[in-house]
Image (tube, rainbow, N blue to C red):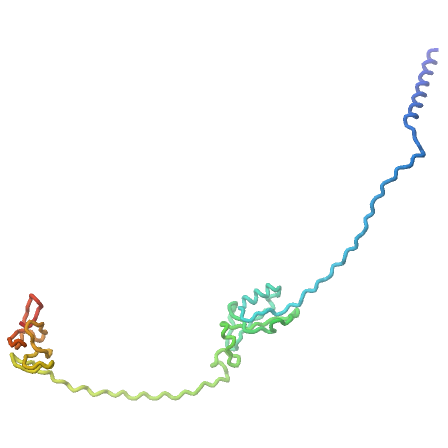
Length: 239
C-alpha cells in the first residue's frame, strides 16, 4: 500500500537523523574539569595614626629701637596677635598721641625672649625721639616738670645807672671870611695868600665853592681872581 511505504520512509529518516546527532557531539565524562580562576584577595595595610604637633611657645621678639609700626609688623610675622601689643609713653610728662606709629620703643615689659602665656600682653614704652629714651628726670622728660626739681637762685638784676648827659660842646666861632685881597694865613699852612671859604689858598683856574661866588681874592700867583661863571669848563671857577 502506498500510505504504508510513505510512512515507513519518514520513520527511517527520523531514526537516521537522531543517530547522526548523537555521534556529532560526543561527551567524555572522564575529562577533568577546567579549574576556575580564584579571585585575588587584597591584604590590608595598617595605617599609622596621625601624631599631634605641639606648637612652640611664643616669646617676646626684639623690639628695642624699633618704631611701633615695625613692632606690629614683627608680631604679624611671628603669628602673634597684635591685640596683645600695648603702648605707653616712656615719660610721665608726655601724652601719647592717637597716631604713634612713628614713635620709638625704649623698653618692653616683659623683656625680650620671655615666653608668652595664652593671655599675656606686651607693653612697649615709646618716645617721639629715640634719643629721649635715655633722658629721665625721675621719670620725667623735662627737668622743670619733676616735682623734686629746685631751680637755682638767680641774683636780683642790678639797677641800670642813670644816664648822664654829656655837656654840650662850646659853640665854635666861624672864622671870618677875608675881605677883598686881604692876606691871611690859611689852615693848610700856606701863608701869604687869600683863603677860600673852606680854608684853602685861592688858586687861579681852580673850581670855587658856592659860598665864594662873586668874591675877588689874591691867588697864589699874585693875581686877583674872582669866583665867576665859566660855561666852557665848569659853572664857577677862580679866574
